Image 1 (cartoon, one colour):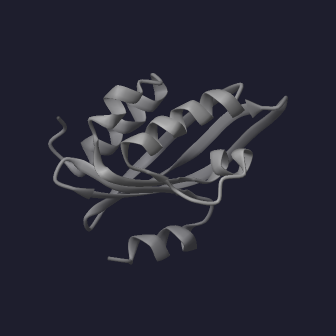
Image 2: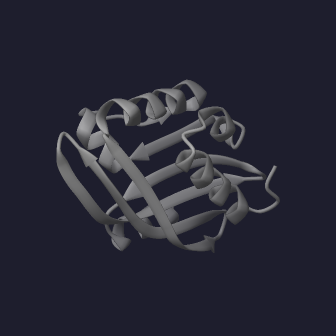
Length: 132
């Protein structure tokens, strides 16, 4: 298991890049809450993916709605009990090319991720990071 919040987040990104749901599950708390903005928009999902079953569903949704999807977390910063990652996503869904900046906000306890959300703006990220 990773030894720091940043290492845990990097390990999650690596598991996603490999589409290894089981490796990702080992990094998240059973109560994990995940809000992936882009995939949620494509699926019409209005609520978070919750827990281990939710993370499995997210991986299935990525396979279902994205023809290609890559995330590029270029800059990770530890912030209190979490990590903020700045980067881009690139992909293709329904024949449409997508490339846009994204900010991911993670809350971590010990070596487990409790919460993750992908947002489009720094203001959204700050609002999330400043909540307990």
